[in-house]
Length: 353
Image 1 (spheres, rainbow, N blue to C red):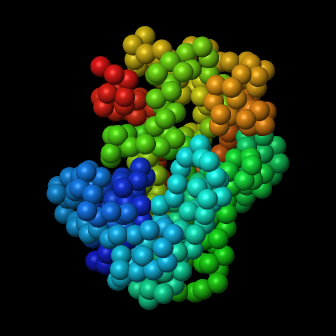
Image 2: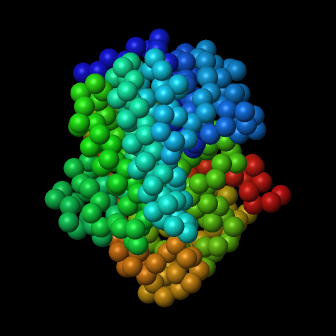
C-alpha cells in the first residue's frame, strides 16, 4: 500500500495535453501543487488554459521546462514529489518514420521519466498513461482472448513498426515501464490504459486523433458511409478521474483498462444525427466491408487493407470491471460525451460559421 502526502507537489509530464489538462484541473481544484512539465514554460499562449484554471483554484501550478528525449530534464520538476504522472507521449497516426516519430519518443521518454524517479528519493508512485492498444492490436485479436473480452491480462502481440506502429509504440513503452519498475523497490507503478478518448478538451483548439475523427463525422468526409469499426470509448474527464484514483488510492496496482463503452463508428454517428439533425453531413449508412477494403486505403492513407480486414466488422469488447471495482470509476453516458465533444468543435468554429 502506498500513501501519498497531499501536501507534497505532484508532477504531471506533458501537462498541456488532452488528458493532462483535465488531470491538472482536478489536482488544482483539490488544492494540490502541480509541477507542470512542458516544453516551453514561456509560451503564454499554450499555457493560458491551465493558467485560467489555476487562477480559479485553491491549488498552485509551477512550470518546468522538459524534453522527453533529454536525460535529466525532469530532475527539477520531480524534486520533492511523491507522485508522478507521466502522460507525455505522441498520439498521431500519420508519420514519416514510425521508429523516430513514435517509438523513440514513447520508449525513451518513459525511460527518462522513470529512471529519474529512481534517482529522486521522494517518489513513491508513478502513474503512466498507457493505452488500450497496449492490450490489443486489432479487434480480431478478441478471438484469442480467454474470456471473450479484452482485459488487463492481455498484451498486444500483433502490432509492429509496419502494422499499427502507434499501437506498437505504446506496447514497447509500457513494457519498458514495467521492466524499470520491476528492477527497483522505491516506488510502485500503475498504468492507465484508456480506450479512444473523447469529450471536450481544456484547450478547445487541441489537435489529436480524437479531435480529427470527430471533425470527420461532421465535415462530410463520411457522408456516404462509415465503416463498422469497433472501438472502446471513454470520456476524457473519466480518464482524468482514473488517474486521480490511481495516484491516491493506496491499494491501486497494476494495469487498468479504462474504457467506458464498447462502441463503433456507426454507433458514434447515431447521437450526432439525433442531437444536430441535418445541420451537418453526418454519415447515414454503414459502408459494406468489401467497399471499405477496396476504397478505404485510397481515401485515407493511414487505413490499410490489413487493418480493414482485421477490424471492420469485428467488435471491440473490453472489460472495465477492474477500474470500476478498484478505482470506483463511474463512466459518463456514451451519447453525452460524443455530443458535448462535437458541440465544443461547433462552438470553436471547426466547421465554419
